[in-house]
Every structure is written in structure tokens, then in C-alpha cells.
Length: 183
Image (cartoon, one colour):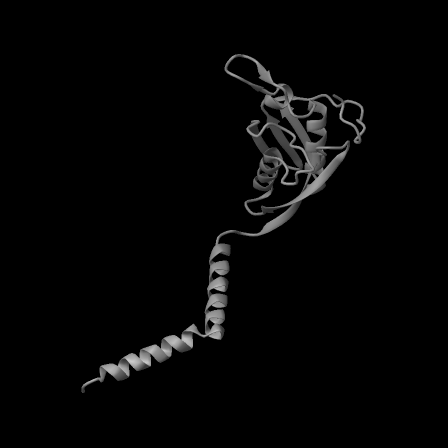
């Protein structure tokens, strides 16, 4: 059986022409988007909206920012992800970061209904440069701990929180005024 080349080319052109019509392209594009979205969600787990507290950048007071953070792997993994996001700083330019970007979190763990977060001394003193001079922390230590505790309590209300620096628990002082930053 011999196939006429002209007839074959005519059929291929007709198929390509019908495929290239706007409606056909839209259907293929939509199907591709659905496939990509489904593939990107595989293995990502569920996400949850968390509220993070930051000082305002150009005015007195504090503000909040919502973040979608992966909510799988248990409470300890969620707390670790929340603290990492808090240290990364806000996405909103009207808010100011709490700590230097690479401020260290030494350990995070949960025992029973108590959450423990141990920070490096960078949150108190700032980062030490090779010449021995410390870069000033972005906010006062009391403001750092206040907003960190507010963030954790808002997102994990049924847990008690213990924040430490280099393994030492910080003393609780009188509540500070949330509208001003003591500099």
C-alpha cells in the first residue's frame, strides 16, 4: 500500500492547523498549567498561615506579617520553620527585621507542652567582626525576645515558651510599651 506524500503532508498540516488555533492552544496551555501545578504540589505537604511580629520601620509600634509555612513534620519542625522565617525578616518594607540575617539559633526542641528556643549571643550583642568590633543588634534584646515570644504564642497558644541565649534563660522584666522602641 503506497501512501501519497502530498495527502500525508496535507493531513499533517491540517492537524497542526487545528492544534494551533487559539482554542486548541488555550486548552493545551491550561492542561499544561494544571499538570505543572499538580506536579509542584506533590511532596510539598500542607502549608499553614503563621503570624509573625516585627517592629515598624519608619514609625513607632509593631506590625504583623502572614507567612505560609510548611506544616508537616510535627510541632518541633513547624516551630523551627517559624523561627527561621522570623529571623529572615519581613517581606513588607514598612516593617523592620528583628535580628541580623545570620543570627544563630543554636537549638529548638519541644518537650511536652513546653517549647525551648536557644539563640546565639548575636541577638544580644550583634555580630562580631574579624577585627573584634561588634555590629550593633537591630533591636534591643528585650524587644527581640518580646516579639519572638509574641510570634510563638500567637501561633502555638497552648504551649509554654522558654527562650534562652547560649543556654541561659533571660530574666523577665516589666512589660514594655509596645508603641516605642527604647534606643
